[in-house]
Length: 317
Image (cartoon, rainbow, N blue to C red; front, side):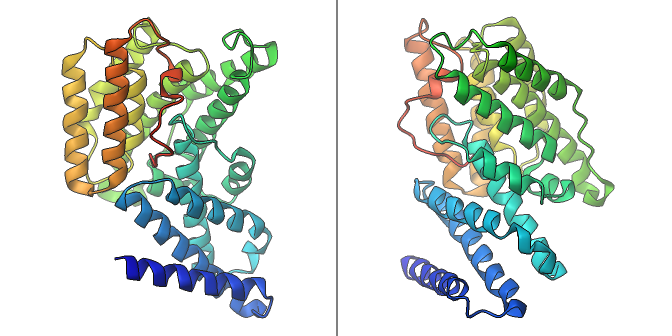
């Protein structure tokens, strides 16, 4: 395993050096860039599936920088190369946006906004199980959340921030995510996943910006809606981890043992099906949050409970 990893890294460096040396002809640039992108996707996936340590973020950071710096060359790519570019942009943006909700990873918001322009909704839905608009709204929640954390009284929002927050709330409640018929038998499954993710984004908004805890009525209502849909999330899709993580850490109350059992059983089934280390890591974080809530019920109960934990960046895509 380590030998193959070393060879992959060596090949990646070779392709990067070729591009940097400017010896690559314009006609060959797309092929070399495609090799870099494909190799980085595979290295990122390898690190996430192996142990989901911090190393996956280094590959992802490089990839986003590489993609962003070469946006202007997309028009010169072949159809196949452009498809790869859009896949990679969606893959890395979704990883960064969702990791930014986990409490220990800062999102590269400006770069993601630029890359989002190159992503089409069909690719986004296929890779993430939600629309590009929803990804953008989740990113905006994180940006606002990061800005208000520096306030002396973080829950007293300025008029501008309050207006942005209310606008996101309104857009999330009115968001309609169309799942094209091209997905065939997966269409009905993606309808469920995209709706669960929309509800999870609303829960994230309440918790991240408003500081709302699991016992507040509006949080209880959204949590109930999410939990009712969880049994319908297909294990054929890899896109269900983020809403499970969000509802587990921000929505499920300490006294709701049945909800906890349902959530853990779905995580177990997901792990047995996917065999990815990020699912195991998500479960450890979830169980740590539940323990903290059980032992210290008087401490902050909103998204702040995820801050300062030592789990490091987690892939939730």
